[in-house]
Image 1 (tube, one colour):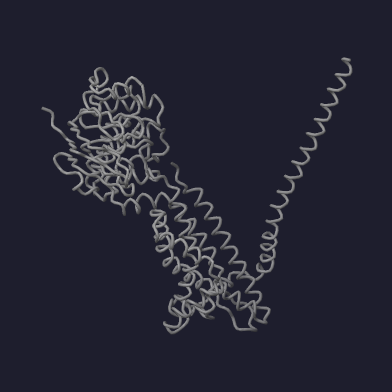
Image 2 (image 1 turned 180 degrees about the horizontal axis):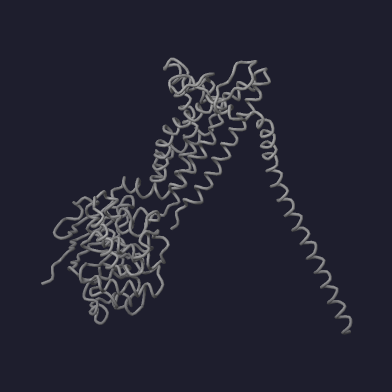
Length: 296
Length: 252
């Protein structure tokens, strides 16, 4: 009788152990699956980086950064005009997009329930979804034609429009997370509302706002379509914002679609530069997020 | 006779349709510590937020009746100027996280664009921190961020920030409810010491605290001022039955 009981007990513990073993195996399997999926997602990026690096690195030397493109047939030549052009266009679009974007973001977070913010938020969302080529032709109609020609300025307007949504979003989200008590602290000291916003609220949310700005730059730096009918491109060095100007994505587009091997090389080199810049911008945004984070 | 610093006559406050304060008549005398007591939702916080017009941050807030600060009608003053005369400390410590301790104390001046030279600033920072009994703890770390301090120290920093403006009244909105007992004791001691120079009005849920530090007590119930008298009288010999019930812990 007793022996029977013991046998039964060991039987049930044995069954339990088996059950646990199966569950553990299921856990391992699940873990392996999600790790595998993550690795698989990073692989394409690594392959792209590797391929572009291999193709582009041969094009890169000192001359590549300092000289202008050479005509077909001559070896060498660089993309200095495109680098200068890209920087100029982006600076100009930052000057246009940041004040508006941050301003709209402040308004949306300050009066979240007003009718204007409802429509404002809606239009920002829609703006984000407009294809970049459409923004390009609209700016062509609105800026290029009235101004009488392609220009760096019109390219900047197009890119600024594309930067606007993410600056607005990141500003709004950042400021919404700040505690109400911060604003109260400032107002209770007799600080007027606009100074409270400019000197207390915005500086406290600066890291988030800046992160949004940097990410929006890295998003538009590679945009080609809106620049095709606005900045147009220019084989020479130009710093005049009212003249056509070259930029990295334009030079990639033009050279990669040309029939000449030398130009293909320059396009690969320019692609590498572009990707490296985007990588650096993303890393900077992570650092800004971490280092400048405000502790309460 | 004591001089009155704050006087309300038939003062009413509303949030939209909601009638929060009903016919408040009270005289706050200078250099006293007033405890504002009452069960939750009785309008005590609204009352002190009405004094520096912070309740106007809530949409649809409006008031009726008269409230005078030093003979001047509060609701005809510019709220910005009013708030420089009426300091406020909140339930949770809220130093400016981007600023150092030094900058936090001087914030009332720097944010308002009042120019001061180095010596004046140093002086204001030192006296304010000393008044808030924080100077000895932070004098070597003045340029560190205020958010590295403990909760109790942060709250005293907020008191120092409010005191730096030399307010006529200091409002404390449950200023110790988020703090540990030792920090609370320190702030109570501080309130007692400050009462020689400032008029202090504190909202508190803690009856012992009201009994310990205040010399006058106002009891609010459902938006009405039930009784306002010397703290001793309120606690030992209240005139109103409701006050008595509340003190004895029958509700609240």
